[in-house]
Image 1 (cartoon, helix red, strand yellow):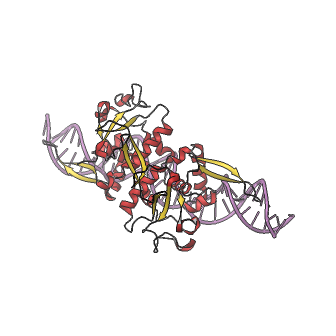
Image 2 (cartoon, helix red, strand yellow):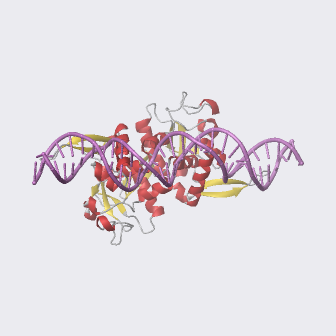
Image 3 (cartoon, chains in turn cyan, yellow, green, blue):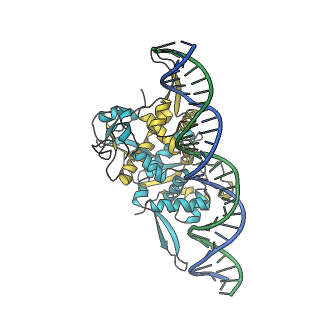
Length: 175
Length: 175
DNA sequence: CAGTTGACTTAGCAATACACAAGTCAGCTA
DNA sequence: TAGCTGACTTGTGTATTGCTAAGTCAACTG
């Protein structure tokens, strides 16, 4: 058994289309660096303050500043002033809905790291708070079937070039 | 509602432990660059040959060579010689089980990119080959509940420092 | 009103990541 | 045996990522 997707229709001829409008690529532009993902991890762990981000994600302050700025620009985090009673106004970073929806990526990354890179077992684990069961990142279709790579088919969507695919020969696929 | 995990037990005091044994971080060391993920995307799309990886992932040949070498070293891809009849022996790269299990990461990334960065709709879509339903990357517990970030609890696992957590005060947590 | 603290920025530099162009080399094919 | 092709490597240059160390600045606190 091989670990490949099934390509159908227009996509079958892999050389006839290019994947440069690819959402994976776009997502990587926004959140594809080590430091960005580490900062986001901390946001999910509840970190909100600049210094804590830098210290806990173990990145330098200039990097933390740059990454936080980009993540705010791209709408994954929100920067808001707040004040605790008797304290002066400070800045706080919070995950937006957009940022929060990236969690499956981190969960999948963590699951994979746990499985293949953690000989001593996972350092931390995710559980469902209500029923205390372990949590997994998985692929499911809308009918509820749990899927492996070989069960998947890749089809052209509406966001490709013109006619509904990213097709267009080797010259024109740019989008 | 906020988009944060619930931290319990030893992990509650976020400053008392460090996440440097973190599986996310480890996973990022191995497959955390744009080019690595793009090369892997191509592997899932069925690409096996050097030149095709470089062309389709749109990375330069030196980068393709470096990334392929690393991915093979880390066991995500396998490099094997093969020959078509009447052709000379060539090299082929195939996903290993280890590499294949990274697919949920790419699927989650793609899903997020489709949702937030693809105003014209997804360029390509995943379907379940058998029932033709759209596919999602989602979080579920072993009891089958589908979960959002706020339903999740983070607990210490066996792979942390010594006592079963990555705890150890600000000085000793290094692992 | 001096000191502290949070939230940054600036300066200077090393290490990656990546690009393009060109070169290598082995084994077919003509 | 000359040429082609797949699979790389080498050379060179830029951009990004990252670090440490130090500086800034506003608003509290003592």
